[in-house]
Length: 130
Image 1: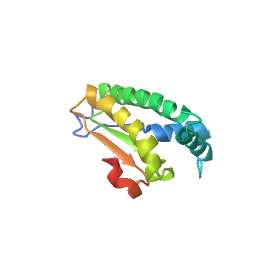
Image 2 (image 1 turned 90 degrees about the horizontal axis):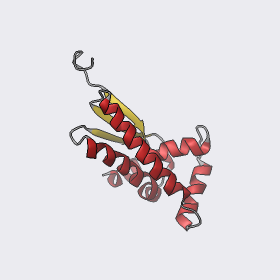
Image 3 (image 1 turned 60 degrees about the vertical axis):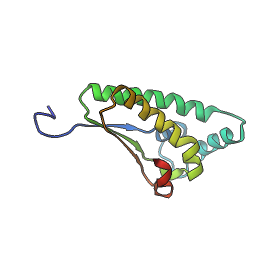
Image 4 (image 1 turned 180 degrees about the vertical axis):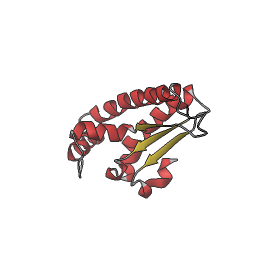
C-alpha cells in the first residue's frame, strides 16, 4: 500500500539500552538508578547481567527489525530514546555494541534496506556513534 501511495513505510524499533532501561526501571525514570547500578556492577566485574541482557535484547530487536522489513518497511529506525542517560564511556561500553549488534542482524539479512540510528541526547558522543 505504501508503494501505491507513493510514500515510504518506516519501521521502528527501540534500541537495546532503551528497552533495557524501561524493563529494569519498570517505568520512565528521571535518573535510571537501577539501570546505572547494573552497569556499574558490569564495569567492576561483580556481574555481567547488563551485558548479557543487552546482548539478548539486541538479538530480539534485530530479528524484529527484519520482521518489519518482511512486512513492508522500506527503512528501519533504531531509536535510543534514553541515550541522554549514558556518559560517552557508558555509551561505548553498553549502548553502542548492543545497537551495533541489532543493526548488524538487520543489515546481514537486508543489506539494501537503510537503517537509521538515532540517539536522543547523544550529541556529547556524536563521534562515537559512527
